[in-house]
Image 1 (cartoon, rainbow, N blue to C red):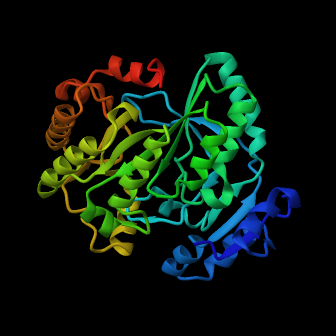
Image 2: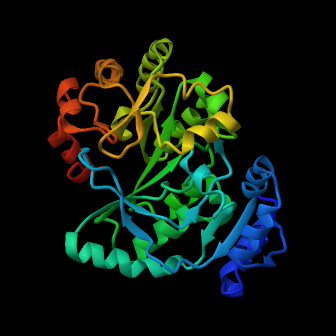
Length: 361
């Protein structure tokens, strides 16, 4: 998966040696600017292939902990993100990171993770609780065997006595759960949720390249639940083409019949949306993708292109009704949608807030 390792000259050897050893690679010294210039000599598709197999270790000079940006006017679930990795070995057609390949044409891991502790401490002192995830700019588990992100977080939370004040979610399309399972055995008190993005098999095959299959993801979910680890399910992106709806209904029915509902912490539904600038990239790199086949219009909330409101309402309503038939009282929420749409399909924002903040494991 990772074929090249570059290390920022500002990184101390002790911060990079363990990663280099796990990879079995000799790290080469290089600055970000030098690597960006190196990537510019490649064709666009070569740049993607090179970047997704190249790991760059550096130090984060900005903030680690950030509020989920959301969009104006949409319902926000008060989610926070910690970004210790940027970039991903997977190659999903809809990934927004494709827009940043000019400036970040490789996977970046920040090795000064300990520096985030003061940011978390300040947040907890002010708010008392933190619901946070690590999968905004990278897949949380794809490189966990190399970077041991899950081990780091569970150890930090335990040693600082935060286990009753932090819920941490690792979002993934991977089946790489071995490192997390070992960390959970050592630090079982941490409130861990593994959030799996799921989709219908035909879409995973055509548009979520190099990710785990649906069957592999379900197997990983069941293994985690057997170990006492909670999961979350993210139906995102839901591709709202009418022929796909029966397949999403089947997917939802099967998932919640197979899984232990007691260890499902929340379920999100998010219709496909994209920026104006991403559309040409999808057309060029993934010409057979169905993502641009539907009729979409820019939203006044964030100017992203979305399916028309009646179509979103129809899909969400069918999905919600299906899930609630199989999983009564399911902890459901909509991602990046306005409150009137919640009301139209019968979802309660109050119940959603209880799910996030007040429901114990």
